[in-house]
Structures are given as C-alpha cells and as structure tokens.
Amino acid sequence: MSSGTFSERIDELRTSTASRDGWLRGSVTVDQVYAHYQHERLELKHPRGGTAKYLERPLMERYPAYLAELAHHVLDPADTLVHAMARNMENLSDAVEATAPREFGDLRRSGHPKVTAGGRTVYDRAPRVGRLSAADLRIKSRIRYMSLPDALKGWIWWHVQHHTRPPGRHG
Image 1 (cartoon, helix red, strand yellow):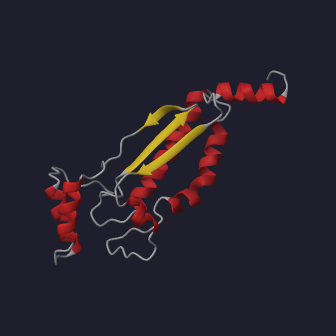
Image 2 (cartoon, one colour):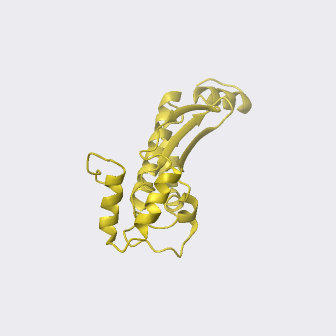
Image 3 (spheres, one colour):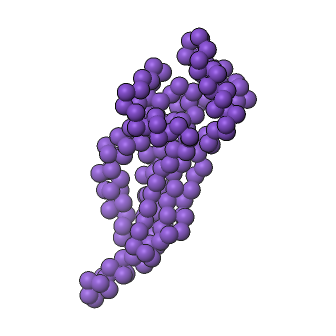
C-alpha cells in the first residue's frame, strides 16, 4: 500500500474503481406506462399475486447485502466491482419478477437493470418485456373486463402476444 494524503488516497481509490467522478450507480427501471400507479397504490387488490411497492420493498430488504457485496470488492480490480453491482441489480430485477402484480405478467418481467461508472454505461440488460404499445394496452383493457377467470385471461394475453413457448418459472 502506498503512502500519501487522504485526498491522494481517495483519488487513487476512484481511479481503481473506474468511477472517475466517484460514482458507481446501479438502477432497475420498470418501464410500463402503469408501473408507477401499480407500485404506489397500496389499496389495489392483486388476486393473481404480487403487491404494491414491488421494487421499493425488495430494495429496502436487500440493500445491506448489496452494500456488503460492493464493500467486499471495492479494492479488487474495477471490473470486479462493476460485476458485483451488476449482480446486485440483476438480483433486484429478479425480486421485481417475484413481487410485482401478476395479472398479465408483463409488468413483472419489465425490470431493466443498468450500471454506470463515472457517468458511462458499463452494464445494460434490456428488460425481458419491453414497454407495451398503445395497441397492446387496449387489448389488455378489453381482456381485463371480460367475465372470464383470471387464469384464462392470462392465457389469452399470452397467445395474443404470439408467444410460441410457455412462460418460464416466473411466467
């Protein structure tokens, strides 16, 4: 370990973590037009499962482990720290899949993890389900108000979207 002033050592740490501006940022975005509404409305009922605060709750439960993971790698090479942050954000995106409302499945598979270091994107996985179009939302609206069992509504939606394989374990 080299000697130097605190300021010099902090500058060295910034350089070694690839965060020239001192920031390593991770995020998970759920980009559906109705995502914020579903997240914030505690009074909504979700008969097929899931809950409000589907992003906030897992983050608050898991952030100590995320920070510990980052602390464990902070003095490793910069790419190791970036990979640790990416794993954390993937874990949070997986939590969205487990906790978001499940009516049609698209909201919960919309988690988009991203990591930036020094203002530069270093990890960016596209969501498994992209933002629905206005036409998709109209179809969902019509299906939602049909007097059919919820499971059948989900099956109809799956096939309207022209999926050729059944959903995975989170489907």
